[in-house]
Image: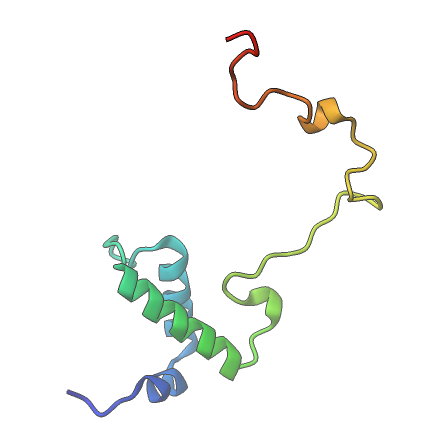
Length: 98
């Protein structure tokens, strides 16, 4: 077994390997089409996150980044009628006379 540790591997990871691992995690499969096992997904994700932290990858380019979006000035939804919001509907699907 090699004496390369996980930390050392992260330190030697090239941008190309980082992009490949990031894509594998995103698609849950290797470039050749084989699916990642849960353990492989976890290890690749950890490697990607550590690489991003060590190389100061901008937040909006990191794996798992979600952009905050709003729908106009009032994003609370307070101006949406209950009918449009789906409130007041019977979500059980059955009628009350059953």
